[in-house]
Length: 134
Image (tube, rainbow, N blue to C red; front, side, top):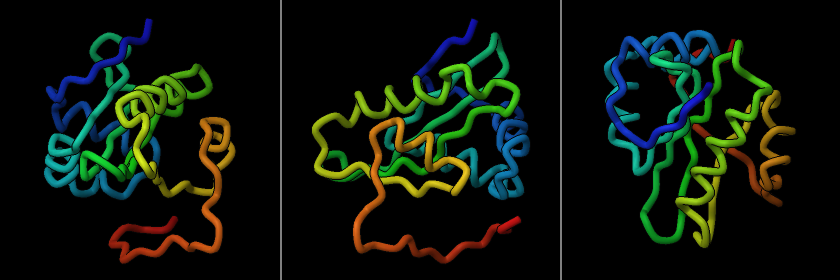
């Protein structure tokens, strides 16, 4: 049975396998990734016993704007409602905010649309990115 948590007691050794399984380049910077997650405005996680199987975090000004920067579910656990539950936890925390923003990879666009997100009009995501695009 999957359990969900808002605690920040994540260890690097629990985080890195999840990010590697999803092909996220931030797994190559384990200490920075760990600190980034622990210092998020809000952090939610999904667990199969002591195995981290999903994570979501938010960066926010605390009043008007929130950016959901990470939402990952281990590939072996996808399509079980875990991502939806994590997004719902984020939405509950930031309900009523003027703007909730995320950047969706092509493969995830349909999922986020099911969660209520719409493509922003007349905008383009822009970044300075130091990861790989494979």
